[in-house]
Image (cartoon, rainbow, N blue to C red; front, side, top):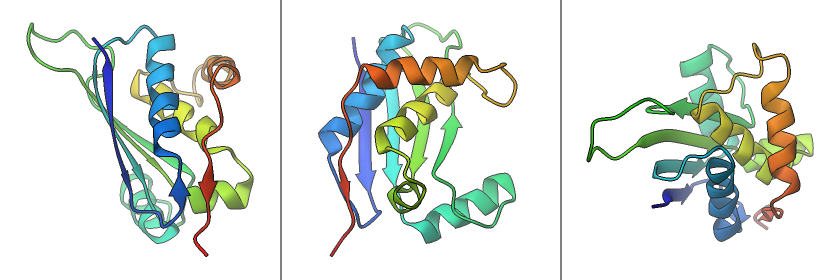
Length: 143
């Protein structure tokens, strides 16, 4: 069994999609999630600002948003686990100097129930440990 990572790049940045999928899959493996489906969408700053406004009431682009679905919930036999979606803005990541791999790990951890605003640093420690074990995800601004 594996976690299937579906990736769509609407950001305009050239991103190493295989490395991005690997970073997300490695996060789930590290968390003991061995099967399921997750969507990863790379978007531009305008689309990210619209999503952030609609879902968090903040009318500005952010670097990553997560939309969890099944997480670690028990599911009936035969029902595929829908982990949720991670949306990353490479443009914002570049402006902040934040590695894309870190954002993908961060977003994936939210899908399995971590909440850095309420867990006394558990998520950020876990994130750091996972990021240490994966390679970078290259992203290049369009020319």
